[in-house]
Image: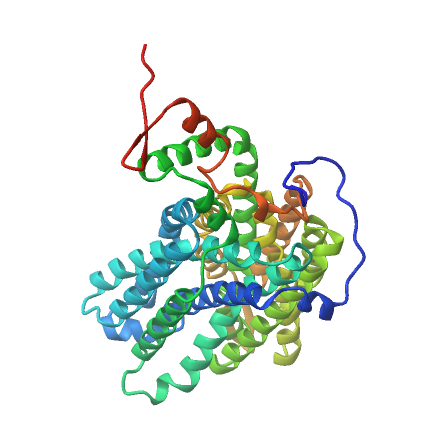
Length: 474
């Protein structure tokens, strides 16, 4: 979609690399406000999710269950995320970005608080399953709102920054887990209290500024409301599904590979450093935090350059270089060298991920940029849910001997799985297309397109200022 709001086809032009300072100066203050709140919403989503994974040992002791049983809650959260993506994504496309995000954030805050007050293990699992529904809605809402309010020329850079809010959320949670939890009378529950408060604060912040431009225009120019609006929305959705079903399947598989890449390279990394390489838990945690820092830098760097070199080209290069760095990630035995390898691998993994928010928003039907990217993202996440379990099961049945001790071989398993995933993602990305530079913010909101005009001309009647459809006489 060009700057006139017209759909055009052809080869995408290359643009010269811009000074990043110039790119940072392009957005207005309000552009930054929209982006910052979306970024904070996603950051808190990352924080809230990792509060459980960082507290597994304490939760196991609290509920008197094995750590493996506690990890079921993480699986439930991942599985239910696609439900939330559908519910809040559709609400975001139908009613606008503001109120669905506010409601979504408040639900997450309430469920974080409820987690701290669960008395039984069964209550804990139920709350975390519901939390998955809440968590699933945030990414689509945050990405669509944050990027549609950014200048087209700056969207690559801010896509990378937005996506790495998740890694920042982990770093905040990990820092509090190391510095606050051991000294708090509330123990691990303090993480949930802080998370609930900060998430609610983001929801309150969203109340103080208005709706995205396309929804303001849709409301100003439309007289149709209520059930008629919903019918027109569904008509648009049906039309879009017929046109975009192949792209939807492509995007779901793309996100499945992306999520396999991140979960395989991250979820069991502390266990790998502790069990296979023999480092203490604190040293393994420090290495993980340094790797997450590499993720933040890589996501920002690659997102920025994707604006000039292309979305797919950036992903392909990041995957190729990531595969080349695998030996540095698993072969050394010194903490410093292994940590450097983790930093560089996560630079590439999350460098590729930094392109995802803008790439999916550009591939999405312009009027469904809250639901399409969010649903594809979370369905891909559901596909990748067994990644950590596969890695753990295989590694626990492969052994290496070190200093007379037999240890599970997480290194070999990680190397083989990541080599396969990098290759598959590289090839699958090359098979797709991109719409870099699309002015999707000019599209009309779903349910506010040409069908509305037809309804107003052919099938309406006015009653007290309201508009209702009239069934055609046969």
